[in-house]
Length: 117
Image 1: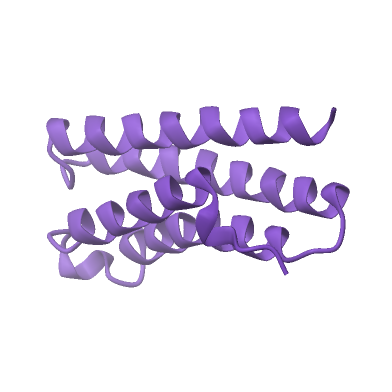
Image 2 (image 1 turned 120 degrees about the horizontal axis):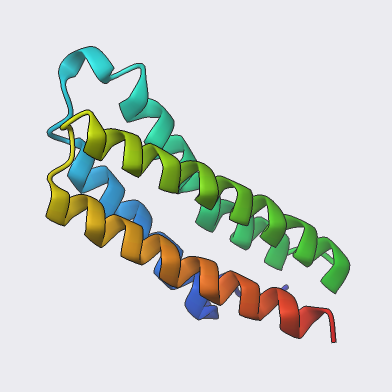
């Protein structure tokens, strides 16, 4: 079985998830079952799908899970934008998370490109 923890994209996605958890600690308590839960689920989905796909038997299956991870990353990015506009995330925090999202997106695209060769 292939070790997903050796993938730089997984490490970046994991770091992004940890950042999301830290930043959402200060969200309003009435959002605990709303946006806080949703943004955390989207964040966790990115490295989780990378990990699951890495354990699959073919590059085509791995690519399918990377596409799912990319979709979750888009969801997370929007939720960061929404959180910033609602005032739940400071501008600097939101920009930092959005930059991390961009880094992971670039890495996912590169990995998908290498799998299609």
